[in-house]
Length: 481
Ligand SMILES: [Cu+2]
Image (cartoon, rainbow, N blue to C red; front, side, top):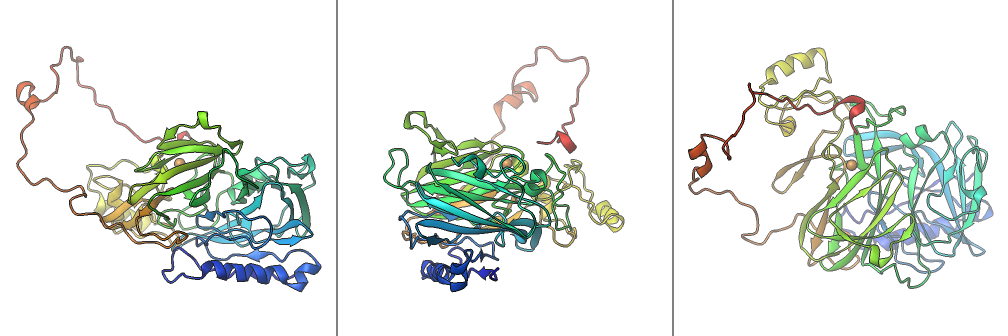
């Protein structure tokens, strides 16, 4: 087998000096495509070692299309072989940087987890070589696609599992345009928990009445892992109680923001391969759900939303006109999914100053954590040592201080002067004077209702015989969803 080729692309997001990024990838793709060794056998596997968002991979061969941008990911180059698009996926252990300073030991494809996005055109004949470099059998299921039954990738049902060290070939025609995923279907609970998944886009071959052309087209998957603070490998027996929630196996503040030009028509395609649902919420704009993994949504069935739930095993394709300038939060609306790893049995300590006692306990139990006196965000200020290789629970510095978030959180940056095709980070939004919430420094009047009733906003008709005090506790353990 030829040695894996490392894809040398430059990030369009983290580097401000990006100019010829697309050319750089094309060169890398061309180099991978014409290698004589590769032409003699399998397509050379292209390996990506960085978690950066790569610029769109503009097709040099085959039918043209408008490529997508994978958030903190990349698109797999292919070669054309007598009219067939050939890809090479390598299932292997990978090290994924989930956030700066926090690396996870996962299983994935071609150097990363999730694996690279595969982009093809409706009607393409596709041949995918899958090499197994794991220690156990695997197979790949092409989620949502119309394929011959024997190409469906279910170990034991439609094919034998691919043994370690072997390469299998999948071949089919991409019949239906849309947003799909691929994922393991062998020892599934373990291999899904370890990160064996990726995105698949089939672009329409011609103008499609239900698929609009857009200016920016993004894709990513929701992922969840259960990695104890201080460790590197996910616990694979976890059913619901995951502690790391990410977009494409990155957690905030490790997730890139999405950069668009004002008045761009924007599409975001999201797949959910976690074990719970995620209501994804966009600030400042209304979006339409234009498609699912079942296909484009008929126009009369589309409705405007600002949050849409993406259930387990589903994909949602949302579209909006980015007409409001600014930095708009884009996140899962389950608030514990915008947190990074934490102990699940953290007692509520609001109103208790326990910093001194916490320091004493930490000497005995190094990973002891409690929440802050004024709320969780206190923890970002507490001088508590974290174990090695642990993401801070909530962090991310914004222009006005700590964002106090982790997990499934990112920002859509809409700018008047973002150039078409430019995916660089424009920096923080500069708000026009007088348009930011501000502190009221005038006099505060006493509310009228307090004067007449001595407290309550309405007169009390009947009171219980004695006062009842309710203590609310966040559910922990298996009850948490
Ligand atoms: Cu969520």
